[in-house]
Image (tube, rainbow, N blue to C red; front, side, top):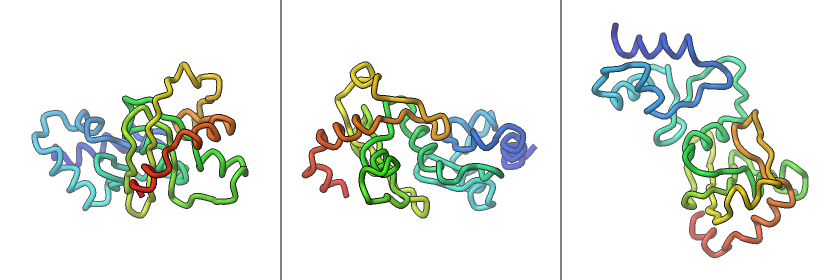
Length: 173
């Protein structure tokens, strides 16, 4: 069977509204023995089977996927090996504490490095480094199953805002 067809059939049978954002390593298992995975993913994107969200993250369009959560799902997959939590302006805006409503921009605290990921038409993911450990802030976090990430409380998001070096943040944007 052709690798593109094999990938298509695997995604059709296994993907769903809660699992439709993939890294190349996820997709490699669908086509074992494919020596040119990058070429296959490029073909799958051109054919409309997959949509490239950002470097290393692909979206398989499925019915009923909550499109407002795509950036969150991509962020969770991008930094799956790091501690990440939704915080800063994203939490404060959701709670109505600030009047700004970030459009196609989400902010997360991360144990990884600070970085803004450009996701093209989908928006931006802002990762802000924190030295805080999950044990330090565990009481201020709840798991947001819909977004596949931990979410800081409003109190923690305000604390996180105080921790952000504004000069360094301006350099990122």
